[in-house]
Image (cartoon, rainbow, N blue to C red; front, side, top):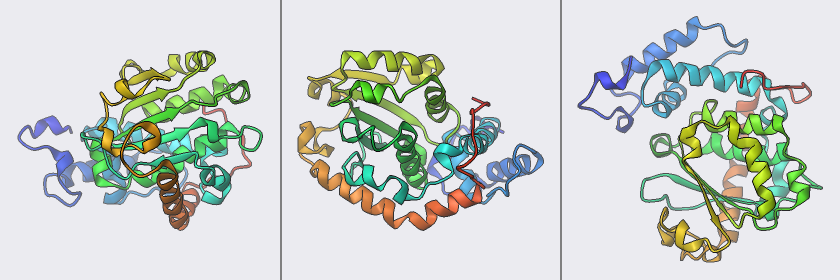
Length: 288
């Protein structure tokens, strides 16, 4: 079953309880119930399944594959996904490492900013840093508009050093690529790198082979004089003054998002428990 069978209606615009959407949700649920890919008790509610359908534009075959990959990735990568408690990464959050802009871009995408210079690799591992991204992803994927219009991420690499680079190995690179491509129900509309030093390129070269062409084409390098090229992709007004915009300061953005994450701790703990994570287990992320 595919959305192309309904050419006069954009199913992404409709609520989960729409008569046109229900057959797709019902079909995905039936096929997931028949599949034996997981030992855990699956959440097959309309609210949960609609995320996977919207992420794949209501192609049930692709949505089922994404659902399977999501659960496999979460089970096989417990060092990242088993503990989504915000307290496990509170030091990073309070150091203004990450924030989500208040306003969306002109395409309706969420805009996320990561500031690598605020990550002290002596205190936090790359796995914990990646967990911050997973926490934010699990929160914003609840938003209907984000399910429809996806996200764009900006990585400010000011302060990137060899200590950061040494933490990125091929195994982690593969796990990152899984989430970017086929293991999480979010549409990645763009990845923008600013202030990237020359010695970041070898790390990117490690990740690049695992990425599909579609994602590769959405990666943009802007360098240290980034404002002109960055604002070709985003409205200037939504950015903090630190990045040449007129929006709230980066400190405000980070504080607001950290507060929202902390307020969501109960929900994040429930996700971890539902997936039966055990952070003491090893993993190779073998399905990716």
